[in-house]
Image (cartoon, rainbow, N blue to C red; front, top):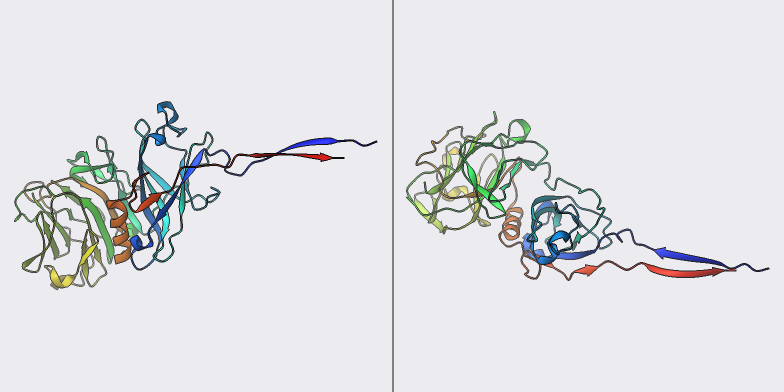
Length: 362
């Protein structure tokens, strides 16, 4: 006697609970001439599809918990990310994603969207060399929480929330703390975005001062100029020009600029929008060998920077020129769904439908 057994097999991929994904690609040229590993890249979108389900979109959680990033199209290898800001009503998001910014072969990444039971976010896209990362908030609410695991939160002295280059920034005075191993006493990198307003171009204003090996410090935002000071080593940027020596350097217009200073215990290099200006054409060359930032504080009067500030970061290593250029390329024009920039979003890709097979065993 033969018996027939009917089996209904449902083949489900491991990512079947995701609604879809967007492939994310970037140009290797955006990374410069060398590869930067563990690079925190900004991923931005503003699209109706990225609203939450309650507002007609595909995201299942109003918090954006089901927007995650992966290094494979099977959505099995999640990469670290930080949700900086997500507007579930309008479908706007800013995420920091840890990638390898490959200067020769750009590997794709994938933004997965829509999952009623998403895995936990793999957090902390900031490598261990970051001592401090402050995003500034969302433009209406000020946030001075350190995004690294160091907990070096800023303290509000006289600052208020302001529009930022990326989501929100601040304007005013805050105090920061990168004590101990988080403070780059002998070498390091200091960076931020700032938007200088018009004003007295002769003011010697301080944006970054009083960061010393004992920890503590002050960042100034609203004068008319920007100075990065390391001991007596002084670099001066005002609303019109980058000053080197006794003469003016490159033009700095009003609007947002990426400003980075690196110190390798011998030379200070200032980068403005990814372009480097070295010790040979800045004031204070005699200060080579200084090993700690100046503890000089400036009053919150005429000696301060006029305009908002965003994305303050301190690293205990010297970030290379290609890393800094990639930061500028990525953050200045990250791209959007349907509008390429650093990232090009591929087509919205639905996940494979489970296949059903009937097997008859006799």
